[in-house]
Amino acid sequence: MRRLAQTIRLRPERREEYLELHRSVWPGVEAALHAAHIRNYSIFLRDDVLFSYFEYHGDDFEADMASIAADPETRRWWQLTDPCQEPWPDTGAGGNWSDLEEIWHLTEESPA
Image (cartoon, rainbow, N blue to C red; front, side, top):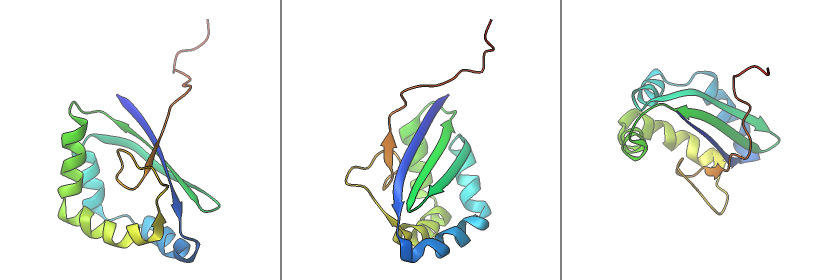
């Protein structure tokens, strides 16, 4: 399993539109994510900065990300969500989203 965290800015004038879209994410978009072995996907918001976290449980990350990008319903979804976002100068695995480096992780093991 691979954990990924990413960030992007939210355009203040599109904030309510973006939040409304995510109150009812389209089932086809969720299905494409599941089919690409994405689990525990969350998006958080602080001020005008979005932060996402997800877990990848597949064996071919690049192919699975390409399958999401090729999905017609996901592409239509991005036509609505992308104008709400303002990418940082660098972007990563999430297309317009910038990858964050994991510097620490608490495992599920209990202390002895």
